[in-house]
Image (cartoon, rainbow, N blue to C red; front, side, top):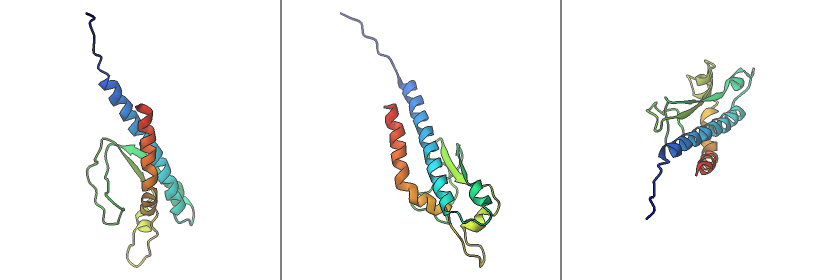
Length: 129
């Protein structure tokens, strides 16, 4: 009788899935940030030029359409993609402050791309299977 040896590939599989998740987040960050720039109002171009994304292990996540009343919460996964701007007046543009009219650009970009980003994740995960 021949001896058979089982080989565990779980760690390799986990590394592959983490890499797929990171690639998916990179794709998502790129797509949403580009859409965000399309919606961003332009006077000098500083705000539009400052919109960027990053992958982080800290952040918040929302369920359903993003609203001004969303709260910061613990991420639901190890990594999240954050999209935003470092320009200090960005919140005043995004949200209504006092009598000033708001010009949302982050929330519409997120809402518009929700159905586009799922296939990006699927594509990256399928590469690993």
